[in-house]
Length: 338
Image (cartoon, rainbow, N blue to C red; front, top):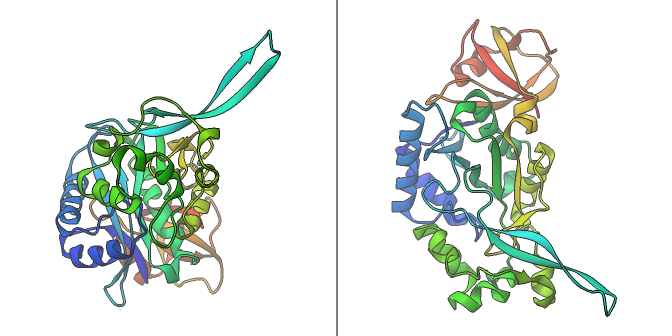
């Protein structure tokens, strides 16, 4: 059984193993023991805190194979992007250059540095072992945390943002970075992302150009990379699109990957999930797959269950599944179709 739960300090060796295999560009999951330990400590403090509005909290989840005790994935949420410093993005804009006398009217695509998305909640640190990426467990790893948001809305902002890892090749080179960032920092993309993971993105972002960048002046390779997704992030990007995120307005300032955003309450896993009372009993022989989560905080749990369930009716769970979720007869769980 694979189950999502909050990370704890004992998970550190396994979390570092996952971080070591994550793609270049997942700066919120650095392969650095000290930073990962800091991340888990901050998460434990956030789960333990009494919160009435989104602040500096961060929540880090792991996906555990209960049979082996191994971790196969992880994901996180930052309650407030840019809480202590601006959260930078490139905004897609159109400038108009016109001359009445010459009868010329041109619309030019430009990128403008902005921090429009500062203050939104941010989904981060998504990683799943490659052999599981095209399975239902990818849905649990990504969407399970949204069920946590649905159960604790006061902890998060009204809008949600995700920086999707952009295109880079097998050598760790990114055409978008080479066309822009390398000119201002004189380092390669992989090194830039490594520094971001260790020291934060703001330090490097402040060295990037503050004036608009005219996209037609960029090399073709950089233009083609804009809005493109790293192959290992395609499945998670598709999940985000099905959730209702929009991808047209912003791109990442380093690799040009899409920065997607949406109203939190409108996301599918939040808007369509339902609180349902639990009844213990035998499992159905067939049914539809659902994401099921308890409504707890530090003891949050989420998993996938096949259920023969009709809306408005109690949810029948086997004792084993109920125990894994930490609920009993008469308790309640949050449910949404896979």
